[in-house]
Length: 309
Image (tube, rainbow, N blue to C red; front, side, top):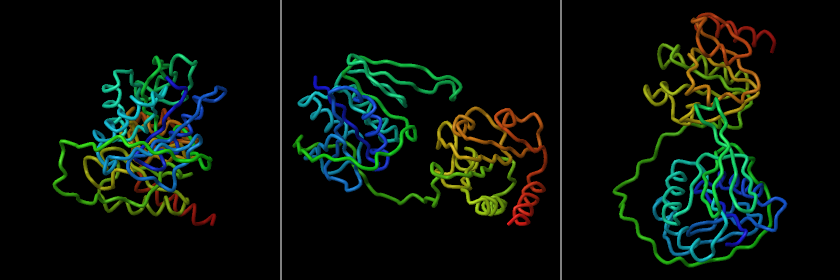
């Protein structure tokens, strides 16, 4: 087994985060980080120890195909660990790969390190209320929690190619439809105004969008508004099964504050809430709170912002 850590994700930005995680593992050791790519190289990938381009698969669209390609390469080159971004496809890829290699698989890990014999890390449990320390004997596979590492911005390194042969998938894509997406990047937003079930109808989101814009921020929401009602695209959903954010200011408007939601915004620097229910759990997670009707409070906030320029 080589003291080499592989980093992979089908998402270019996440791949650079996983490369940062891999760099932490080999820090202070003679190991190296290799960023793995499938089928085609990508210009935006940062590879501190170089790239490994796996030739043979026609694309990296299928987790099954990617897992098989990684398995064939890992059997030959025997890396100490394979890190995969914990995206929807990445989680499936990692579990398939670990099963093929017959090694352990750690999920949604951050603060990764190694003692030379095991892979060590932390993961959130009980909706983020508890941090569990986990360990897995090397060689190992792990999915890296998205957003837990900064993206690697620059790194030297050449590219090595390895032909793993053609990889077929039993799944055939009959057709593709483009998913509607919004123009929001909640992970980089410094201010987030987040809407909950207290908003009575979809049209009323406009005033919260205006408030977010006036505060130079972005609009988020709790799960019901995106997944159940479909008022906003999924990338606006903040919570345990959505996006995790850590803005300078998080303003929760009409959100009750169940664990599934607060797990996604608990790292915010300042949290403020507006709710008619003085006993709403969201207030317990807030630095500031206003007990009142959002339809009165939000216009008042906008008037105050306008008055102060």
